[in-house]
Image (tube, rainbow, N blue to C red; front, side, top):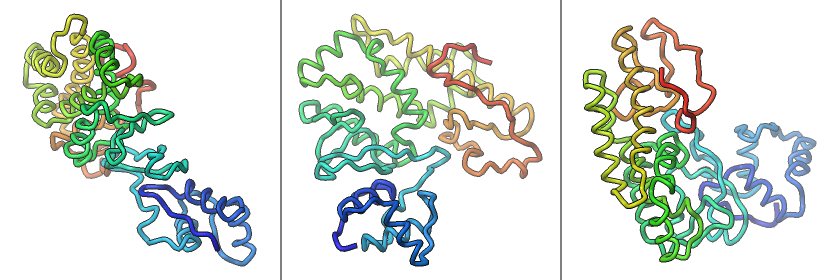
Length: 304
C-alpha cells in the first residue's frame, strides 16, 4: 500500500488494519477482498496467522509486530485503549501486559476517557512503577483477579471520604480510580505475596490466626483515619482466603492438586498451576465442572 502507517507499541491487528486501510482510503474489508480475488489466502479470523502476515507485509512491518501474548499464567491479556500521546492522538487498541493503568512516559491515566494528566499526583506514578517492577514481572495483569480484588479493597469509602477529598484538592484530579491507585497496587502486592498467601490459606493454621494476619496487613495499608473502614477490607480478603483454604484442604484430603481456576492466586505460592497446563490426567483425576456464576469479590454469597 502506498501510504505507510506506523504501528504503535502493543497495537493489535484489528486496530492497525483499520488505521492503515483508512490512510490509504480503503476499508480493510475491501483490501482483504481484493487480495483474495488475486489468489492470496486471507482468513477472516482476526488473529489468523495468514491475516497477520498479510498486514505485516502491507505495512512493511517488522516480524515482531502483533506478537503480544494473548494469555499469561492463565490470565487473558485484554485489548485496551493505548495512550493517546503515545499514538499522536490517533485512537488505537492493543495489548500491553507489562503496563498497569498509567503511561509513565506521558504521565497519563489510561483507564478513563478522556485520559487524565497525573503530573500533580506523584503517588500514582510511583504506584505504576511498583506495578511494573513487582507485579507485572510476576505475570500480574492490570485486570487480573488480584488487581480487581485490590481495587475493591481500595474503595474510596474504605480509604476515607476526607482523604479522597484531600487528594482531589491537592492534585485537581476528579478521577477517583486514579486517586486510589496507590492503595490498589499495595493491596495487589499483598494479595500476591507468597508469604502472605501461604499463611492465610494454610489449613494448618487456626482461623483466628489467619484472620488476625489479614487484619494486621490491611491496617498497614489503610491507617485508622477518622472515616476509613479497613474492617470491611478484612472481610473481603477473609472471604477469599477461606475459599482458597478450602481448596488446599480438599487437595490434602484427596491427594490431588488444588485447582484455583477462579482466583488464580495459589500459583504465587508454588502450588501446581492447572490454569496453565490443565494436566489433570497426570494425577488420575478430572477437574470439577462446577463453576461460580458471579465474582466472589463483588458478591455477598456465603463461603463453601
